[in-house]
Amino acid sequence: MPAPLIHIEATPDLPQEADVVVIGGGVVGVFTAYYLARRGVKVALVEKGLVGAEQSSRNWGWCRQQNRDARELPLATKSLDLWEKLAEETGEDTGFRRCGLLYLSQNENELAGWAKWRDFARTVGVTTHMLSQQEATEHGRATGRVWKGGVFSPSDGTADPSRAVPVTARAILSAGGTVHQNCAARGLEVSAGRVSAVVTEKGTIRTRIAVMAGGAWASSFCHQLGIRFPQASIRASIMAVAPGANDLPDALHTAEVSMTRRRNGGYTLAISGRARVDPTPQQLRFSREFIPMFARRWRSLAPGGLEGWRQGHETLRKWRLDEVTPMEKVRILDPKPDMKQIRLTHSRACDLMPSMRQMPISNVWAGYIDSTPDGVPAIGEVEHIPGFILAAGFSGHGFGIGPGAGHLIADLITGKPPIVDPHPYRPERLSASAWGRVADF
Image 1: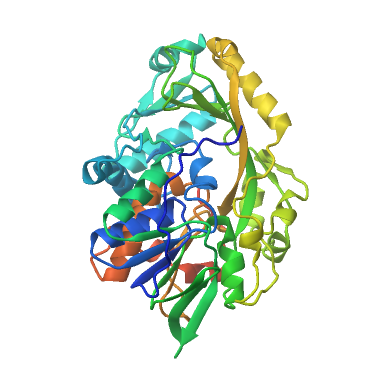
Image 2 (image 1 turned 90 degrees about the vertical axis):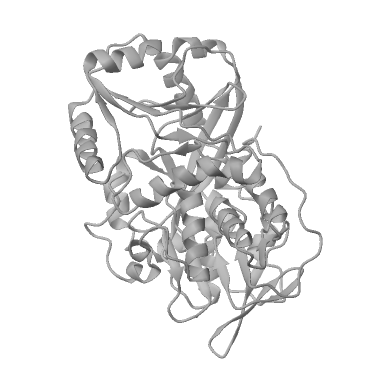
């Protein structure tokens, strides 16, 4: 079975005009539209498939500050507060809770790296606790192992990937916005040098502002407009087990396997960083920019197959606004999971937590995680097309920082003081080399 996801009813009719059109119904697009709608902005969200159906429902569900790159940490901290407020604002339950995140290790170098981050975190008001051998072993008692040490971040937490984005999309409707599923955006119309409309398969929406929050599809969309946005995706495989194990941590990371308690009492399991690199035309085009990223993480990555080429999300082809696009041919990116990795993940989880041997596998899935060359998202207006705002390349961190990113984009559009400094995320930085600037975590 694929990744679980609840479905929502969308707006049936496309508006003729809107103040803002948000392209992409993942976590970033949905929160952008949500915060705009709450401010009285007439916003339309268009999604080629189903809201939340790609990477926004295929991740671990972690909402963390722990081990964030310094450029992303302010956005992560603000996002935790926004996750917490969302239920009160909307009456909807995203499954968010500050359960704390537990990291355990047997590696002195890894522990030293976490301690270094702890020292940095103190300078920006973030609390994280290094664990002694005795403390780590007690926190990880379900493993039956003695651990050299660990770290616990008590204010971090998790949300439910199967429902967080859809229920927030429902809140857009309640706030006066519109949500349109199975409605691919084919491109933009530009008049007098700036955005004048978004052209979709179901009609044209006149607007002066368009937000591209299309996840792994963002670069191919930008290519239609002559915008060079370096982006590459890797295929990560994840599994879930049914409820049944007791006294396990809510969220645990180790070098062998990571696990997250699901809403139903089961667990999501994954090996951190492990993924397949499926070659695509876009990856070949941007290969030079991604040398620093792949050089740092090559131990976790393995060659893939033609899965990505067939999906079409990283095509270099150009299309007319009156023809069927790759987004309409592949409504939802649903790549094949790497079953060799799934078996390894399950084996490691059972070794780590013996009680997991009694829990049957309930779901297996894969997803494409899009990244920028430096591992930090691109958020901001594209310089040579006024009114076109890019919000993509979240590099596997989008779910946790989605609320903050959406709030920031809404701030930029409405002229409000930005929730965080937008400078580190400006898209034009990607025209320079990423050497020495790849995100640490």
